[in-house]
Image: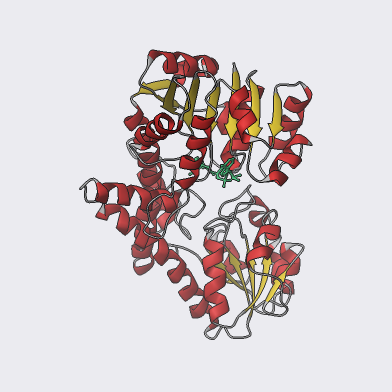
Length: 434
Ligand code: NAD
């Protein structure tokens, strides 16, 4: 059985490498030639821990190959995992034009039975449309099935997540499709949940929206903590000890970002509206998330009063640690707000600076990229923690203090102990803690 993976972005590349590492014969393809050229040479176009090693291994053992030609990849494959982007449209709904485009190409190249698997995050009922496109555009009476197999990997630990999934959701409507997917994921047989396709599609949107809700909930609680003597870290700890709630996704901070949560929350809201179900709950989740940035920038102003011409070190640009992904990163909104105020920014991130430079080109003294956190804080009037990279937790704060113009930290991720930071002589602000 040959598996074609269409779209080798964050999800597709990990899927291709992961399936190959599970022993399958995998062909990856993408419209961006550079991604295919790099992958063919064993080079990842994204930073994801452990991915490049596995890519090289599976290219070498012949399980994995990459191809520029989509049509040839379709023709050569028995199963097609569709991993293309489903970005947000202006009205909040998911842009399904990439999925539609790929579906048409599959239809036009349907030379033998194929199982078309939606791995991209798609609105419920997408499979119905894919089936319609395949039926309308296929040139012969070759049969096919459509299935849903949403991806739950987390960027930053994507390889581990793919190879150690907590669940494999398989949405199918035929025994044949079910058997094929169970064979592909045979290794994880004990973790497979088989559902109909609508259910599988909805599990993904519901999961991401629920996790985003947890984050916004604790951020709302953090605002209340700041108005009282409560400490949000301990409130979260106390809540998380209840197994019905659990400790995860209860970290107050600058809110969620990335390519999934913001768009998936809005997409589910739109799906609800289209189908006559009121999702005001998720609109509020989104609003609270946006407010986190404003609240954070207000803290910077509270600490520095006037931001014009102040030198501010911004540590952390990726939307979360261990990735170079800056899509919808909170840092982007923080930088935009600070730029509006006329601040001079020294930016640093262990992996995401190249991508950020395309968005905010270097222009001294307004925007400078530093080669280390210590360089970024030199002469700074304040240091902001925007992404919780481990490297920042391990900073030598005494050394930091010595090189700053003013020892002020505004910690958007609650990385440091407030008492210790103050003992070291910092004026220290964090989220939901005194
Ligand atoms: P991405 O933008 O990194 O990757 C999508 C890839 O598809 C790109 O490389 C693009 O060039 C390619 N592509 C687009 N049209 C194509 C075509 N016609 N033929 C071949 N390739 C084509 O996006 P991503 O982060 O990998 O996300 C992909 C999907 O998976 C989205 O629906 C997303 O919501 C979902 N998802 C993402 C994550 C995540 O953490 N990034 C996790 C789970 C699910």
